[in-house]
Length: 259
Image: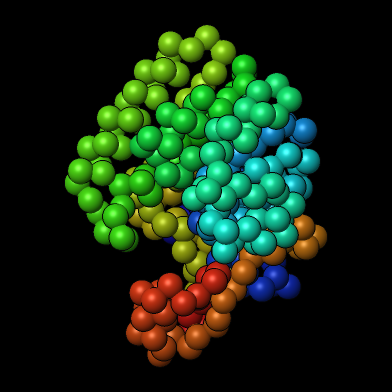
């Protein structure tokens, strides 16, 4: 691995917390700053706000002074509100009606990790100058499994919202995939020792951009402005148990295997 494609991690930071930055917080940071290009004071609606990327977005959004709204279940309302956002129960409340009741009739940015029909309604939630960022396809899953009918519906709805965005003079539809910014499919993993992070399968298309974003996250972690959740640290010999915990969705936060 060329040295130019690595990022040094200060030894005084917790390696387990740093692992959260690599994928979860990097995704959230780049959604906000590389794609949506948010500005302090803007209103941002986050779908799935109690999930791992969602909570990272709420933390990072609070740092830069955004007004945050998040859809979540009633069980997760306290998680969203604890992070300073306005919680919207997606089962009992209409998020479109809620945000269009705000001054200006909408929000500046919607971050949509669900896709499909939700994207169409999210586009309607935008104020003039607003940006919809589609970065996931959770809506294609049924009871945790890929569903081909849901995939077809997702593509149809996503194509429709893209066309709508092209025809709109003052609202945008944008896409984000970490692979798009960093080249071929690769997950960023720690080098042995926990002090360097590298991409699998070669360097990113823009290593300077990756380094800048990762250094920004490291500084926020050092200043205790973000708080990655480590659910449990397990010895490497307990890898099977860790997978079983993931299968039961028993962990809130990252499970970290420690060599």
